[in-house]
Amino acid sequence: MTQLAGKDGTDSTLRAAQAALAAEHASVYGYGALGGRLEDGRLRDATAASDAHRARRDALVRTVRDLGGTPVVAQAAYALPFAVRDPASAMRLAAVLEERVAGVYSDLVRAAGGPLRQDAAGALREAAVRAARWRGTGVAFPGLTEKAAPPEDTAEAGATGVTH
Image 1 (cartoon, rainbow, N blue to C red):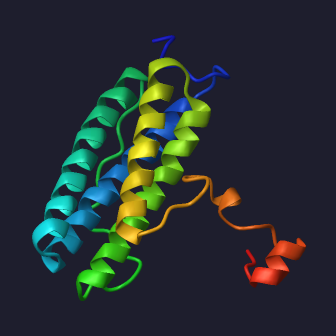
Image 2 (image 1 turned 60 degrees about the vertical axis):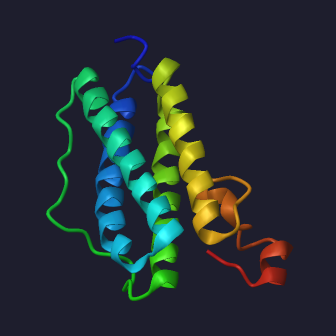
């Protein structure tokens, strides 16, 4: 159990694992919603991603139990961030799902230690690679939204028009 415990000895590892589990539940649902809009190679990619998220979800259920928690359950349905009407919007949703999963795994990497931290880092890497494949581009710091765009009070933000 010590290897699963967080670096700071608190329940932050359990909270981060629960958040990752909730994100995996949502991803499994999201891939089910977008799969019907894809064909051929992209459908195979979506099926492989869905299978990967199911495997991560099942592993996280065991992890949460090992940490002494009761795993969060999947919701009956999830609100999608936009309508999925065609292959382009399906691929955009897949990228969003992967980016969201990468974000929660970055939190788990920060909270965990030992083998759980290594597993979370692997999951973060896998989600970032899938997001880049779906979107066609990657980001410098996957899973870290604070690194995705320059702060609003910098010259760089003003030059690009990006604000948060």
